[in-house]
Image (cartoon, rainbow, N blue to C red; front, side, top):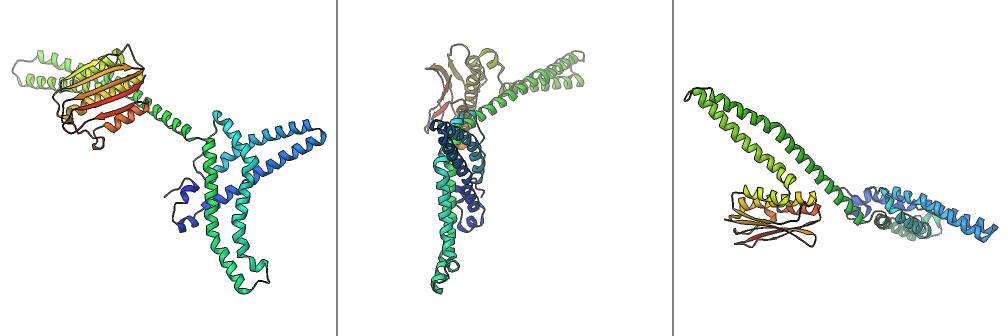
Length: 387
């Protein structure tokens, strides 16, 4: 198992943990606090040298030294965090105040706590282990016992160092990159992926519409014209007629595929017309009552259309319904779309009916999906999408 942080490494079995590099990385992370310690010492020296001239100059020199130290310590903290947290924390302009706050905390308090923790945690077991050498007058049995105790405490020191370094790293990450900002970046990334996917769908639809469909139309017309010049009832006429029918069937299937890839009706006429179109092609009769004022934002319309299309596909395949209905309204700035049927119910997201995909698609636009489908029916699916 790969561990990203020192705290995750602590959950491993003792022998693999002690044999890993994590205790050494934790010790290096704590020892690296000597650099902020030097910066703090230089800041104090600047204050003292300025005070020798005048108190005001000492204050100015101290503030200037503190500001300079903060500018240097913030990127240093991000750099050394990689010792206990392998996921990098990139700098961001909106986190400058957080970085400055962490730098001030490190300069004033945290650096000497880290060094004291490291010194006592390692120094105690080492002093015990080397006590026979350091104090030659000890009795042999006392020296042996002290050495054994020191050696036994070294694994404890490894856990202590790693735990403290991991906690310090977790605190630094929480300040430099709060979880909410990381979640926001994930949501933005997912939204960008969905937008890119939608653009690709439109490109494929356009290529099929302007390319393959036009060629099939031309082929169908050519076959129809060729059939007019052949004697009625001849074998050639029969074959041309058969090819003409196959071309028309392929053209119909291609048009259906194009509608599934991207609805041109949605682009040209909006959500209400697109829902009417997809409901009209459903094998189960569907009543449509979608009343929205004008055009909605493109992501809202695309997501709502996707939800309705998938819901009607599930209705036709799995519900056993004799009739369905789609309604759509704007309620307090939120588009509310409901799809219900008189089928057998029992819809379950865990059975692979596409409901989980619908919920994920809605989450991208901060929407919400709710489902009521008791055994025996009816089924009611409700999607809420902020506009």
